[in-house]
Image 1 (cartoon, rainbow, N blue to C red):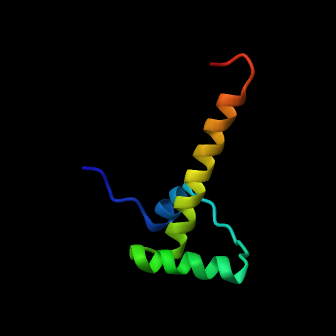
Image 2 (cartoon, rainbow, N blue to C red):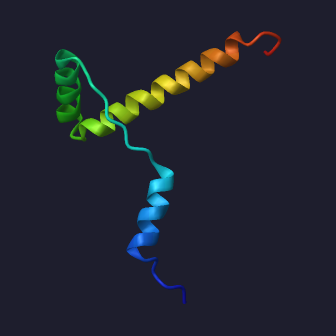
Length: 71
């Protein structure tokens, strides 16, 4: 039977999987994001991650479409 990973091993694996960032927002944008988080019953961090993932996917799709010679 396999042993449960230690807390240090778990933290090390998590640190490789994510990056922490500090972001500054204009106050009106921050308030809008907070309202969205409350409406969806999720954290503000979740809202920011979701929006970032959507933006990155859209930009990647646009880059593929605009690449010359690729269809």
